[in-house]
Length: 168
Image (cartoon, rainbow, N blue to C red; front, side):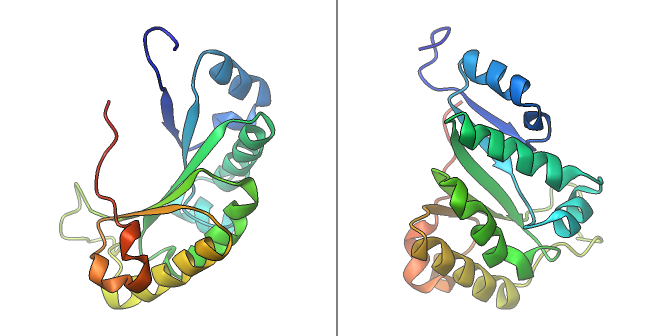
């Protein structure tokens, strides 16, 4: 335990973790699990979604540092119109890092309820793409969790639906 906590998870975009010494300091401070957002398989997609050049390269270096340092990695991918065509490529990219789990969260607008930015992916497009990604993950023995997608649309992957949240 660290400071009375049995488990410490950091949710991050991973960019600062590109600095290996910084990542090591976090591990030394007791963070035992890193929940890193990765919304694209490459800079073209991730940087566009993040609206920041270099976002993918820094996050990827951060994930690589975490793997080399032996940290537990989970990834978080928000499902939206900008990355739905790339979900299986995200799995292919992340799988070699042996994440403890990949999580796929359906985009739920909190401020843009009318979806004026057009980020809500229609289920007719999202579900087949997500099933392909889950097939790819299963083939590589990568555990997945899916948030806020109807289980009836995921076929044999329905058991991946987990809308629970960790205790904080």
